[in-house]
Amino acid sequence: MTTNFRQRWLLIASLLIAAYAASLVVAGPVTSRLFDVLGFGMRSGGISEGLAREHVLLIYGVLGSVLVGWMLLVAAVAAGPLRSGEPWAWPALAVSVGTWFVLDTGLSLAMGSWQHAVFNLAFLAALGVPLAGWRRADA
Image 1 (cartoon, one colour):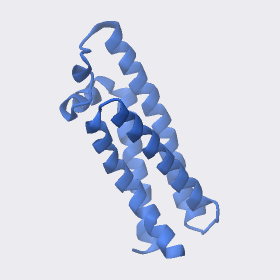
Image 2: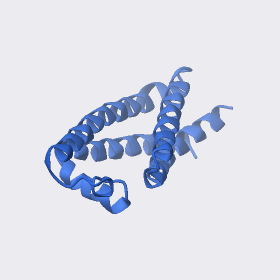
Image 3: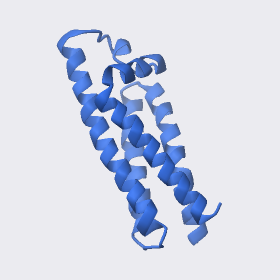
Image 4: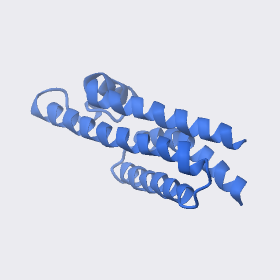
């Protein structure tokens, strides 16, 4: 896997994740249906309408906003400092992605939401595979 390929992969993955996250902000009710299908949405939590539903949609929007910002930063670091070999870039991204995965997946499992933990694996693969390849290439 070449540096250009890994960089493009990381850029595309981070921008696709940012687009998904933006859907949490602008189309929370639609995205929540996807979560229901996957088994960790509002319905599985017994929430179907009212104040509780509105609150969860607010949380989706806040989560989506933070995730968009994080993915734009990942894209920017991948496009510049990581590609040019800045020594801080790889550890910064690896620690960021690793911390998210451990905390989010650990909480999901602790709360009994194995479906969400499995959902996280796709995001880990999208971001982690090119990062792992970068590390091996630098070793």
